Length: 271
Image 1 (cartoon, helix red, strand yellow):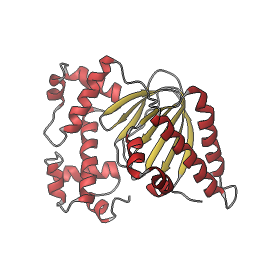
Image 2 (cartoon, helix red, strand yellow):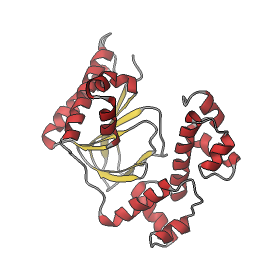
Image 3 (spheres, one colour):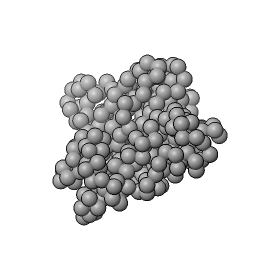
């Protein structure tokens, strides 16, 4: 079976959180069948519900956390650029990338059964029914992506967070854009008019990240990119991404990516 295009369907109990924020070298489609979730991608925070679909481009820092006290069920599809080459050719890679970078698509209620049926057919073919299963799975996936493009053209969106939580989103954006600088919890909390203890709790509740966890995650994301696209030394990259200690950088990188910065570069990002 072709493992490049992978699909899973999972139902989780209330209060489930993704254990660790992460980013990976595959794109991801995340569709919420039921329940509600807070979703953070880079510096954007959204609340999604039943019928909302999220596209997470490769390399983007993300995490989901619970909202409310209900269980949720989701489908996740992992794919590479090579899985949608035909769609790039038909619509233009720049336009398809624009759709993917939009992140959030709200599926109209009357079309959710159609979307979920496509996903169920993919799940069926993922069992390896016969030698044609890989082809059928890919055809259903292409149909799904084309439908998502149609929804994007119609500007179907999920709702932004409420006004109170927009402050936290602004704070996340500030941290994201200034992660190469020396940033402390107290400094950022003061900037947004909160005590450090209240800001810490509120930031965690809204984004799913602890302050330090988010800051380090953003720095590692940038460092990963620099390791693959520049000739700078690992020490130079560590400093330019906001790490004062290259040993600490190495430990943090291994904790998040599972390999050392040197091995990550040597393997061209494959972990």
